[in-house]
Image 1 (cartoon, rainbow, N blue to C red):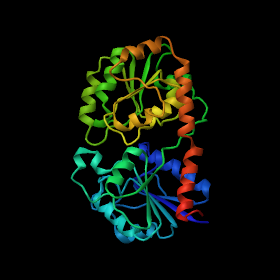
Image 2: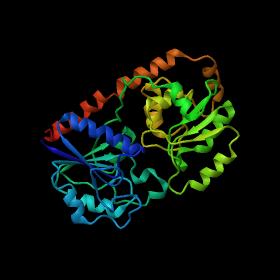
Image 3: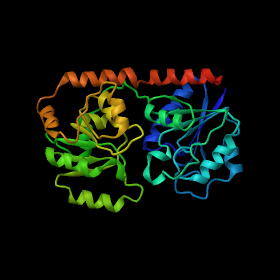
Image 4: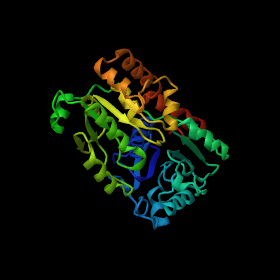
Length: 342
């Protein structure tokens, strides 16, 4: 059986890249690869010190090479895209030169102001294929002379509804509480002040699921302490239960490479307030009807009198464009064209 390896800074956790990588691991296993995971952090098959975000000395080149030596195909999840650990990116690129590899790109440096001066990423090699998670990024790659395929993130669009009662009981939330869920890590670009303001305006309880990262701890503590609404800060895996428990999903991000929660909200039939980040506009172009953070009167009206047609339509669009079958078909087409099918 052909061996496939997925490589990233961290895998098996609750961040967006880990979640997408988990789906790809399942898809590639279904296609016929014997998959292993390789990262600097997380519950992985092969832990390589130096690959992690905070391990800035980088990995020993021989140790990393040994971790993927038996791989017929290597998928690099964002590690050669965003400059969170440039020494690691360089080692991975050098090791994979001339080998079949898919570089799966989520956040190229030019999309983040603090990384805009970094020009060495992404690397390129004639033996590789590049995949982006949206067309905006694909166009930006093309402007830089790198051709890519676009494969939107895939979701289990037929997963049954979660347990609202059990999740609310776990959170200590009463049945009549307006629960405003924010399925996001606590970092600046997730726009937590606006998410809190929405919950305040709607007189709901704000539920933030992610931990503080990127030095956001003190800012988050100040924001939550100053909130004029009840606050729940409790990390919970993104399962159908959280959407079943929520009355409203908020995702007012300033920037996202994709943004899974609005699609997940569509799958599990929840209204969603979505920020003005560019990829949100690309996804909305498929027909999704989301609410703006600037028009909360429309949200209030929906909550008072839910529009089932809106929820039906959003769910149908999610099933059409973001199913696991669609992602698998796109991935098979890529592998077939490259001659990499097992």
